[in-house]
Image (spheres, rainbow, N blue to C red):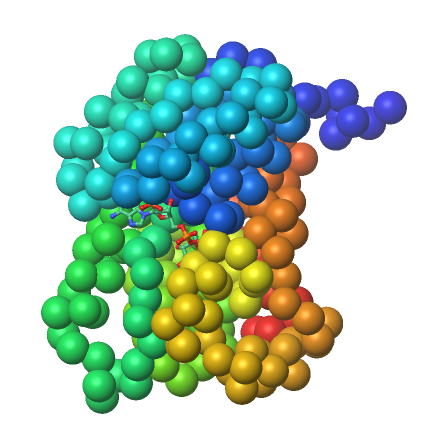
Length: 261
Ligand SMILES: NC(=O)c1ccc[n+]([C@@H]2O[C@H](COP(=O)([O-])OP(=O)(O)OC[C@H]3O[C@@H](n4cnc5c(N)ncnc54)[C@H](OP(=O)(O)O)[C@@H]3O)[C@@H](O)[C@H]2O)c1
């Protein structure tokens, strides 16, 4: 038997924190973490009903759940939620940033500055606030941080600046975190989410931003010629968060069907 086979994927005590657990991808991550034996503390913003559904799914997987309403722009709110989760479960060994606002797709020339500022505040500053709140707990647990980003930071698609710009900054935060916190045993990685048929997808189809032409073109560019699912993304996130990835840090794994090649 190898050392890798003997280690549990996640510690027995403490919990995994998932920010954005009411979202399509956040929910899949919370449920898969619960399936690997993690108690889960997750946040929602406005989606109370969706948060309740996620909580039921985590409980059905046999794990305990703690749910909090958090606006990521509010540092004190984020810190309170994370500290409460740590107190409730006896620590935080895993943190996943799976939140992000709705992003109207426009050319840079047509994007109002206010929209750019707002998205940076929700997404990049939100992720920064989470990192600062959770870091003391991750140091104690020698835990991991994983953030969702986008393949648009490698292969830009027209009208996608509100996704590419904040996520490029988040990737830089993740790399910095990996470089600075490795000495405390903390790992940090990112997952680039390609076009999937869950989460934000539904709002983007409804608004017309994801029309048939856009979806066909995206599929065509992907090596695997199909859109993905939240579960497929969650598999990669849970792997990077787990002890199976214990020598992987500072990396961005594109889970995008080969879009960013
Ligand atoms: N789906 C895709 O195709 C795709 C592709 C590339 C990247 N991504 C990225 O992956 C992440 C998750 O996407 P998703 O598809 O799961 O989106 P989603 O279903 O719309 O979920 C977004 C989550 O973020 C939360 N949220 C939004 N603003 C917040 C704020 N200010 N404070 C706290 N929470 C906030 C939402 O809470 P409520 O719902 O409770 O309000 C929800 O839980 C996002 O960062 C997104 O940009 C997604």
